[in-house]
Length: 123
Image (cartoon, rainbow, N blue to C red; front, side, top):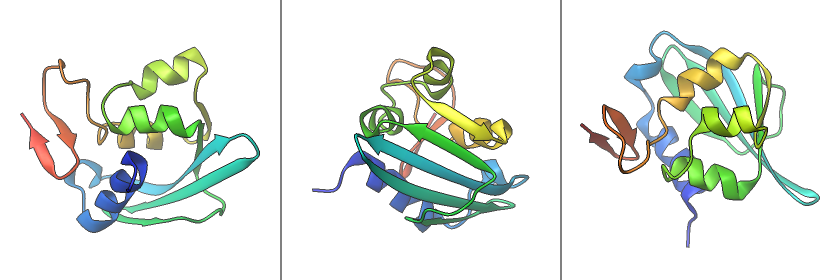
């Protein structure tokens, strides 16, 4: 069974191009910490062209989160900005990249407005 985090990153990689990030370039590394184990996801953005790898390398922005929280983010059960403000998630480097990528995360089921869910548009 593939978890929500893996599905999220695989979907980003399959997209290849994301119009919402057409003016963005940079690298984000997501470090998902659970005890002594850390899983790394590297997202490279080149004017909307996306490439995802499971790799631990230097990035413009590094986001730290427990896997449980990141799963909630990609399922739309939690808000990235709220988690960041509470201190449940950390960011080092260019915060603007995280704010741009945050738009790709689905909002809560009760939210209004355009948000993307993996593989489908929510209007």
